[in-house]
Image (cartoon, rainbow, N blue to C red):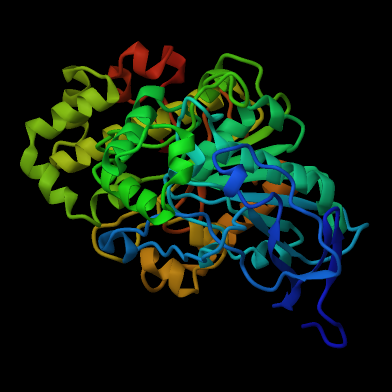
Length: 502
């Protein structure tokens, strides 16, 4: 607490909340932005919370959305606190100036977790460092798994996305009271949070609610509706109930989570398989987000920052010992990757030629990473030159075999690498200079739309955050990417570039 000051109180449109002063900034946790999504509201669009009298305490994180735990192998690297309670549509605010008049830029953070796990309570997402540097940071919880992304004949699709839009509307209506500027909101997310950000860019109901967007290791996409239905039907078969929202709403919540974990245990970014995801519907997401950004007029005037880690796939393969298994499968694994990425044998041969010493797992991993992340992000940047900024995170973890894996950059973006949560992935000795550089770039982007390097243009600048000082790389076409077929990569000009330091 600041000397001589009591805990801060801010009035929202639904009632007053009392936060805490911590590390020199005001923190408000667990503020409801929508009513509990259970009972009559289960599998339905969010509705505003009931107003309250008096002052509501906002000193602790609110309940997290129902979710199964990570497997033991993944739990070594990723923490995922679970807080029990129905009031899980809540958010947190970190601010240096808890009162109207400050008009500070706002970062609106969406957590990752494959749309089935994660929450705003993950310690690495501590927003105090953004508040320390003059940015109001908001992080939210939203419905996950079958509760948020199940596809039913008797309920609207994309409940989790609707939650995110409701939270953005809460920011529009309330953030000025916390010192934020509702006209300077940046939506940012990593992995599933980035996929969600891509959907918000394309969702008509979200237009005008934010000015900038950051997509970290997740490209705009829409899931195949049949795959999502298959996930629901498999759960229904295990539970011996109809595949309807009415039947699922009557089922025991714990049984739903166990069934979800069982039917989804073999799905992964590399292996594919049925899973939950955002789908095109007739309402909140009327068009595939990637198509809307590349070929349409979605989110005009919104600045973008897009990026990935150099070795994304290592987090998907290393924890479960899949590197060795994929290497042993050899040609079978390559055939599966070819089907997953819809490419021909010439693409596999091209990757082999470019990486003659690589094992099968590395070839498969890079192939899938390019297909899921690099290629669609290059397509978006090519379609929006002058307002897109592209980066690559290339610093390798000190832990064995992880390299610059998926989610490793989070501790650097939030400048929270000194905590045990970030060290789960980074190990010991993460360079503070790199955190200063990445966190500073994100702050600059939120403040002004310019992170500190050139916007995407014909030279294709990519900021590389790795060992040593960050540098901007430029590059011509790489022959291995030129092998991709047109239906995978789009026109020739949309293919990724090999980075060449200038």
